[in-house]
Length: 119
Image 1: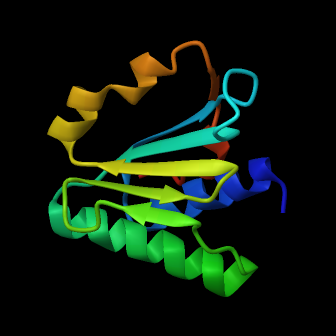
Image 2: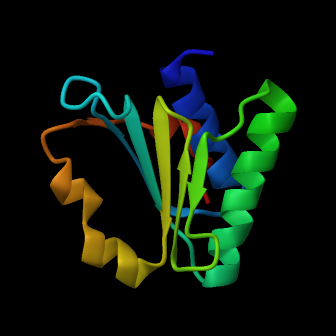
């Protein structure tokens, strides 16, 4: 699976579990760390953990993709590192504090509107 396909599947899976404000940023021309950041908000710490579990379980079951690293499972920010795609699941206050969209503003915001089901 390409990094673009992985990113798109992550967005779809997160949307299934009602992630809020999902954003994807292409950074492949700006860093060697990853190709994409997927950033989303959970409505509570329980929701954040549920999103992380749902993403991890579905990517493993459907595509055989497992994260290389997971951080923050008991906090208001969970990071799932799939090498070519890094997923950040934040509580609203943590998302505002870390402001990854501002930090990576020179990246390319990816139009994911076709991957998100309308409410």
